Amino acid sequence: MLNKPGRLIAVLLVGLTLRLGVALWVNSANPAALMQPDSHGYDRLALNLLNHGVFSRSPGPPFEFEVFRVPGYPTFLALVYFLFSPAPLPAVLIQSLFAVLTALLAFAIARRLFSPETGVLAALLVGLDMASIAYACTLMSEVLFGLLLALGVCLLLRTWRSWRFRSLSAPKPGWPEALAGLSLGLATFVRPLGYYLVPLLGLALLFRHVFGRNLRAGVVRAGLFLLTPALLFGAWQGYRFCRTGSARFSQVECLNMLWYRGCGALSLATRQPIHELQTAMGLDARTGRFDRWFDLHPEMRGLDNTRLSELWLRAGWRLALKYPGQLALVHLRGLFVQLFDPGSFALAQMAGAEDSESGHAIHAVLQRSPFSLLRFLWREHRLLLVFSVAGVLWLALVYAGTIAAFVGRRPGFAALPLLVVVAYCLLVASGCEASARFRVPVFPFVAVLAAQGWRRIFRRCS
Image (cartoon, rainbow, N blue to C red; front, side, top):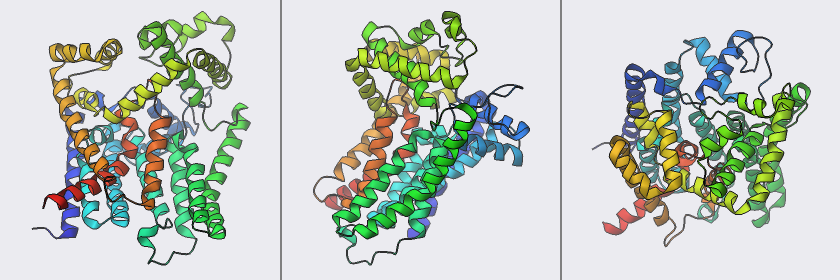
């Protein structure tokens, strides 16, 4: 029998072996699957940073400043390309290491909140998760974002006292808060999803101490936590304002408002598949190009992406206000997809059984009827169906443990940051573009709660 450190090392090695094995196999058998549609944009940004020192997706001069992506993940890729080679495999192998570090952070969080045994089980759940394995093996930002997010929450918990730890003396305000803010600030530069999460957690830290009747400590801790992100965000937004005339952190919210939220609501209202609707309105969903948009709106030729995206934002809000019920359904469906999509399509794509064309066909069938989708998968996509059934059963096991964690003796107030992060990330990222990859960064926090729930079940049954 392995001792406790040995169990943790074995669990981490299992997760690392799975990810490295899948990455190396896919690179040999189906290397195109290492790249998702969004990966090509990240790759171009990284190459331009490396070769020309510009943050742009333009294939050549004059380089137009990128307004939709943030520089964190392209900078990581540029560094990997500089150290190794401009190819997906080195970055994917490093992401596999990042995924294992995230599992280690899940262990640290669970040990702080519950026990080392719960921590080992949480690390195992992260290591075996299908979506986490699949997206660690693609050139996408979720793994790096998830690592920085987990690190920030782990550091934040060092200053988060609850009734369970009342016997312990509170550490003095200092580096844990500052480093937690730095980690979450850097995470936002990987995915702008974290932009509003940082002040939300700062307020939670403040009110935690206000409820504990220690306003001064709350102000100091929250101030230390928010200081570095405020400086980073302010510097970036000031730079963007000088370059583009817009102080938004990223214009991606403008693009999403029309082409995903607005089009999703219109798609439900007209019962037209969203990809067909996007094409009719001017977006080629397969390539991400807007050539048809300019054909339909020739008066907008010559507008830069910043001003164009602001027009899209207003157009998206008009559709949202016109179809509020459909927009709510779009978000609910996106939330459902994030929770229950096991990541099976990405895994089947890596196996060479699916591609983007089949993905659009499956999505169109899903919009008509889930029961039609089951028949369609059984007839033409059986490997995907097998992966999906196995993945859904896995998620059912995880969620059963999560529910069990709240039955009887509750996790306590110390688990609140985990719940805040999970709820925020899932709700903000919900929409018709939602998929299992949006769940990957928050899965470690779900795994911590699930591990605690299953530990309680095991204790009751023994």
